[in-house]
Length: 467
Image (tube, rainbow, N blue to C red; front, top):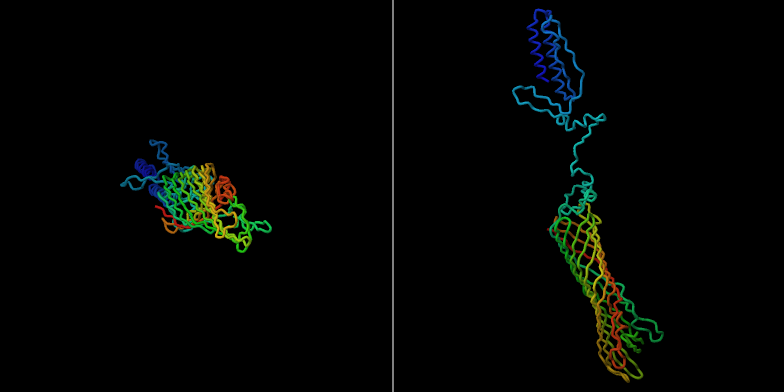
């Protein structure tokens, strides 16, 4: 625009020289004042940052060969700038410098400026860090952790595997505390006078068992991982007893029915161990599990009683020892749900696994009878009865864990677990299917009962390390 003004100035000068005699006195001074007024007006418009441009038309020159009629400049109407308009620098000695309306107007695009309802709208692309669906997961001034959650945007836009990065290895070491419930009900001793049950196998209350649980995870990528998990809990012991003097009667323990029992005690001891290998596939908030699992459940029950009679005099004891074992092999399916994870220092997950397994079950029972003062016709003996079977059984696990971040690589864990076995052999169920002849001690019937079930539950606490 400055070049146009200078060009007009040169043309006006030439015309002044050519027609100087035809112009009235003072015309040169008037033309000069008009020219510099236009220059000042244009400069002032550029300084104030106006978004419009005044275009000054050239002086009309209708006829250069006619009389010196004065030419009058007529201004054009004010128009909005073209979208790609550029203004060159006023300094002829420097390189031309382009002028961007977006930079000139403080970052507002030309498209926004030309809207009829323009209200300082910033229509620049929003970066991912400004996305509210992502930013709402980082609350407060805490630094984001390496183990980030999956945002809703990633779930609903297809990136549903999991966090963009995760540790290559994770190891969890817990102490597992378990209690046993629902011991099978079986009458053991009766009241000799009334025949009512005075001691049942369900009266046994096993104590807590403690053992380690170790889990190792290897993340192949953000979607897939392998898991190895092992735990063993021993010494799930329980006891129950009948005080003297009685008299009590045996409730057909392995086929024996003796009265004049003065006292009795029952002791149990159980153990569970498990090893599993799983392939884990993340699907947003859920991780699907599929793999192989081995579970071993063994249990033992020992019943001791003493008998005594006055007439005829007799004294003796019986020992019934029954051991059962179940070894389960097979595949399982499961799911690990992220119940709470807002990218801060606490996350909560729930786990469920289950499968139908091949079960190699067995039972082994021993009946021993002895007497210090044997009654008439008493025959001491010690007989062992054993049996095994192959069948299918069910094993399931559910649990929940809360993890608290201590550092960027170490966490503390606490959780609750429940294990359920069904279709297994238990000691109390073998007292009626494996029997001996009371007179000779020979095996009367030999069998195994696998209709039992076991419920274990308890808590775990430990640490988790990541690298």
